[in-house]
Image 1 (cartoon, rainbow, N blue to C red):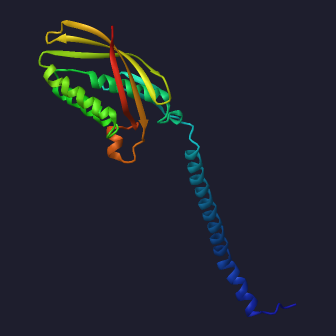
Image 2: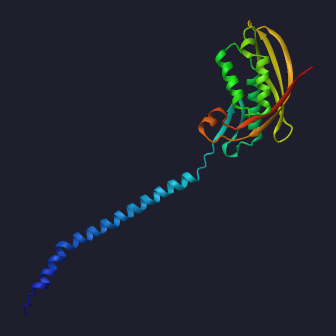
Length: 217
């Protein structure tokens, strides 16, 4: 029996053979590309999720201008109201205030530090200005130096600290002239910095509002 030649079926058969494989391969490549894009999207999402749930917790150590550690703790647990940071801030402030050194640059930095941490218009500002007028550190440095060692900073209320320190006065040759013990009361206020300038001069936002002291006999 002779098969009837159908031009339409023959053309369809040739089309399937010639282009069918190309279409199938193109479809497979599109599917593969979609899978790769989905995999990349999931990877990026995973990285973002992991970064948001980072298990790395920084440990912060507060040091004074001589590199001595004053306070430390886990960063996420340390706040401006943290009592350790307030004590450390008061300690460094007292040392800067009572310091007398022949190093003019260090003395100027100490004075700048003192005024940067005084509440504007407060009783502490008047007290400190009168102290510097009566006991001018640059003039005293011509004949003597004073080093300060704080023994304790104890809170007496949520905003007041009692500080006990020892001052050693030496002549310009380093010979000790006197060793005196002092005790003072210091009131503070908290005002965290809101701009970079304030953050540079008083990063903790601890300001002295009032103070008094007396020599321990």
